[in-house]
Image (cartoon, rainbow, N blue to C red; front, side, top):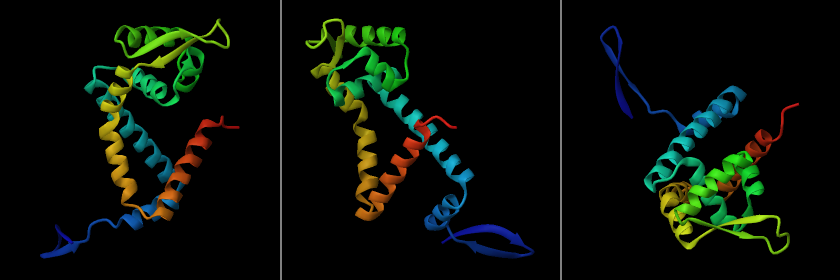
Length: 170
């Protein structure tokens, strides 16, 4: 319990720290509070991601592309653009930067020679791992502190939120 100098005449009262369970209950009972929490998480993730990208000399979009290519293997520019929400011309510029830095390679698709595949190089995969390791470690720490059923429910909630927000509103 922490003490707060809340005056009621001459009386000081003890103010307990906020109970995480009651905060969760308040958020769960209000769509507005849940929206605010999701917005806060989004802003926080944006800031953390930008800092991780700067730490390896990249922009946020470049790190996002490198992360996706490191995980997915080869993708066409159109596929990467769809995942990142970037136009064809933006993907071309991004791919040029990453290729010039030796972080990705381009090759023709064996299935359809009209398509160019983008693929993270070994240097690109190392760069992505280096940039994202601190984020991954924090998330792993949080996940390991959860009981398996709680972790499952949390992951399901995040998946549900992502799916709901990815679907156009009617």
